[in-house]
Length: 171
Image (cartoon, rainbow, N blue to C red; front, side, top):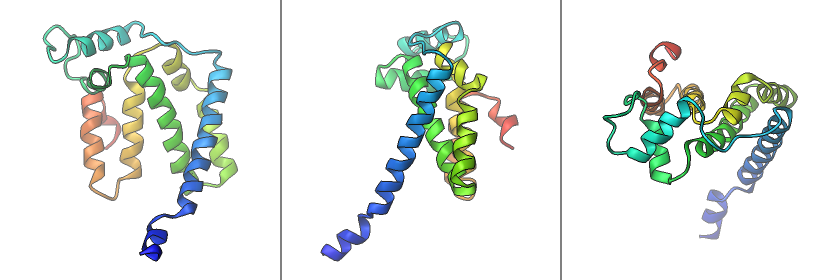
């Protein structure tokens, strides 16, 4: 019984996960420092998504009833759309780091993730709140990570609920 527990409980996996989380957190913090701050309230288009999250399940007054996933997550968690975007941005950095670490060296992976944290994609999601683009990018990345199994289709379907451009971007 003890041998079976030791077999399923692998310390190396825990250390690897903590390593990836720590490096991702440092990269995320670097991006916040370089981009000089973060906004916690939605703006512009993000206001529509925040309003849609508050009015669910009624979507008749929304200008974007087909982009339902981010407002639905906000509705379920009772968090503002921008707070969810910040969490999703960290998850994107973590998944990007994990994906690249499997395909590249450590230095190259860290450099690419640091470069990403200084781009407009990163800056746009921490300053102009509420846009669903980071969720669609995260789902695209998860599609790429799972292209050889059936989870690809689940992530692709979810990305269609965030942004219809997935029909053009992924194939």
